Image 1 (cartoon, rainbow, N blue to C red):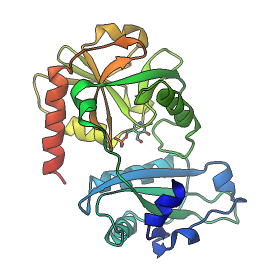
Image 2 (cartoon, helix red, strand yellow; image 1 turned 180 degrees about the horizontal axis):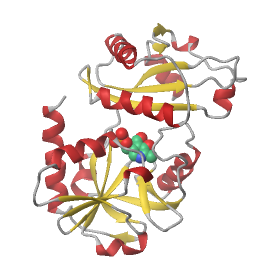
Image 3 (tube, rainbow, N blue to C red; image 1 turned 120 degrees about the horizontal axis):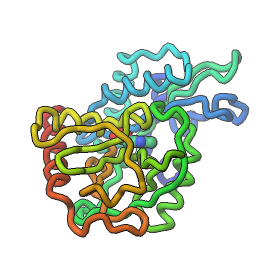
Amino acid sequence: MIALAILFMKYISHNGKLVNPEQATIPVLSKAMFFNFAVYESIKVVAGKGFFTEYHIDRLLHSASLIGLEHSFSKKNILRWIDDLSKNSENKDLLIRILLMGAGDENEEPQLFMFPLGLTFYPDKFYRRGVKVITYEGERMLPQAKSKDLLLNFLAHRVAVKSDALDAILVDRGGNMREGTRTNLFAIKGNSLVTSPVDKVLDGITRRILFEAVRGDEKLSVVEEDIPLKDIENYDGFFLTSTSMNVMPIRQIDDVVIAKEVHPKIKEIAKRFKQYSQSHT
Ligand SMILES: Cc1ncc(COP(=O)(O)O)c(C=O)c1O
């Protein structure tokens, strides 16, 4: 699979220069690589146009500062290099992954890699019927940083795949469902749209766009508070958000079927998200 991906990948951007994929390598002795001293982003590009690209770059720079990763890459240059890479990619629909590696010691230099991957699409029936998720005990370190420390996400997602679920919801030591391994979690409770407080999760770009899309709606108040796993039956519905999923309804959490049908409020929110995001890109 990897070989195939490389075959279709014409260029990788390394510190702003387009190079052949074989040239974009990280030495096995790199301390930054060994200690995961790096942050990353995944940016959706549709028909050659980036989806809220600036939000992603701001978050990349914020993640870097949260882990004390010093570098001299500017937002202006990163935006230019993304443009360069997408113009020179064979496909116009892409997911551009950005990897910003720090200097692991005084002999290393920060490095910025960008590489184009294919977009992930989910079957329509997932959106119509909702998906299954599982729960997994674990807390991300520095939750607001999109860091390369992804072992927890990997292990939890692997269990999800084995359980025929789309994602695993990470449950913290207080028994609260915080977020997925690659998604934010939302719940509907009456007229409230509930999601974990931003200091406990990744400040998802989709989460942010969704807040903008529903702002001013008197019939829906956004509440940032813990969502205890033991209380799932007190909520009317749940959904996930992410760059590749957008708004994905949840049908089942572990063995509990939450809703046989997607809640009308979730349908409405998904519609509002789509309208808002289309008119702001
Ligand atoms: C832990 C975690 N939470 C939430 C998200 C969703 O973020 P976004 O909406 O920016 O894709 C991601 C995305 O990768 C993630 O890794």
